[in-house]
Image 1 (cartoon, helix red, strand yellow):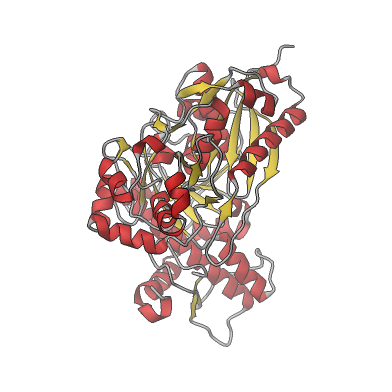
Image 2: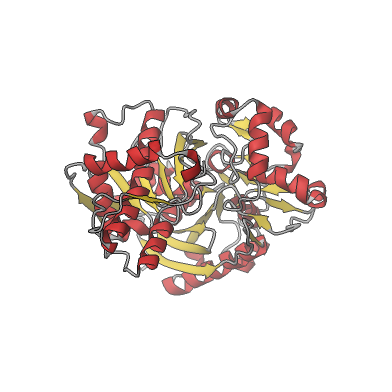
Length: 493
């Protein structure tokens, strides 16, 4: 029996690389290879050597091929989806000059604030880029580098995002896509190009940046001989432009112009992220107004305190994460790392409403509720940015697609259902970022819209659909009341 045409979708995240081998015709996941990354730093610093990402990609592809038992010649295309916002600076030989600054490196917060003011405030930034600078945005990190490591900034012969760096290693071509580029802080979602005024503000030469392909599925080149030898793959196979991890997850979910528009997806991970594909260009200072990988837009909101914060509360209470109950009168805003949405960068956790009869299980349940209310409020803001009324019956009836580690937890799912009152869909495929990248690779190799491909692949997949339950408005109002009335000294905002 002949081997199926296979594509490889790569998810290069903060902590690891996953390389998923997918049947390009059916979307069946044939194998997955994994390899870890190394993250260093303390006191706000988070860095990685980009060469570790490349070695991890090679190891993950080799492991996936071995697991699949397929011949390497079956592979027809590859695409990388990478962690957003990281800053990679290269020398003239394409080697990293220093460790990359990662998205969660917060040392550039002062530079973000200064950049916001230098352009005239949040409104000026959202009008151009769709997003207001925060420490995560690459432009803030570039500014930090100019001020704190000026030699590396001056010597830079190339400036890349993490996925750009890996794509260039694959194809020998400096390329990116609108989706990942829109998280840099120097790409305009209004014009669909690098913004010369912002580049001037940042002292950044456009010649240092990769070309922007039309979409993440565009074939930007072919696998070079050197890369083919390192990966154990045939030289000449298609290399797609690739994209950022959130944009790739949207493709994997079938969100986009040839799929679902204005349908929210909620990722319950270390951070809580909500996004939707839309034809409406978002311009809300409360959101990141990203571009999507397929030519639409991807408004996105990120909350910093989600599963990690709740797990910390569970550990403090000596409880299993599932040993929780609704919070009763207790309210816990688990802002253990500050908060991004709402913008409270110096916030700490806040607990109120304790009674003699309050149990440990209720305290843990209150942590779930505080985190869930925060990300669901961001969901309402997201839908508003798509031009919708989040409370209109037809909008409220649209299901939330729950992804990420929290989507596998009973308490997380039930808390979101109870506080949202919405139907919930839990997709069966857990590797959505890699699946989206595989759809980009399949499109680059054989044509077709990647969102349409991913949607067709889903028809043979599995998942859970949960009906809505009556919304717990009492808990919602109790939590939001505390959030809105808490004074600045209490939340540190």
